[in-house]
Image 1: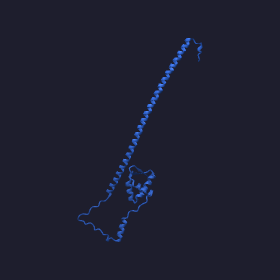
Image 2: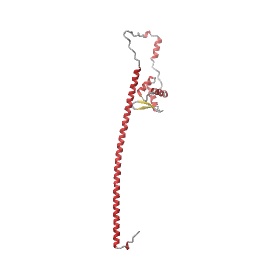
Image 3: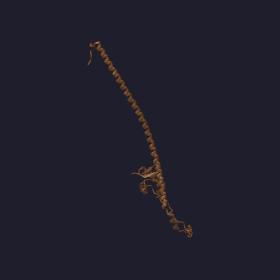
Image 4: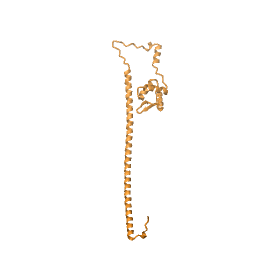
Length: 202
């Protein structure tokens, strides 16, 4: 509702001006209070963001340290497990060997036959017995089955022990290297840190 100030008396005009001044003063106080609240909000948000960024950085650093610690632990544990397993296998092999007793003093060792006294047939038989086993080709399926047989009672096997056992079955070092690489690439074998193998899920 508009007021026609031309019809107001001097006293009414003075009262109207005073009310207008009070309203403007209240509005100014309100605006000042609002600006203070906004400033406090901005300061609080800035402080929160700085603290959060600091914590995120510390968490990231701790996560990196944790990952490195876990990786080092896995490598050391795998290496030690491989050494323990290989040592246990060698001890088991030694225990399985039959020890021959030395001849008693009263007994004379059997006389050794000389090369001259051996027949041609005996020399040929000895030659056949001393021949190295034929080298097998590293066929993936056959190699995998023999590895599964070797690992039937274990979860993992060291690379050195695995190659030693397979070479005893007639595989050459070159064929073994190629065969193991192929099985690893095809996920039938998984090579762990430290040089051990476990069977894949295929």
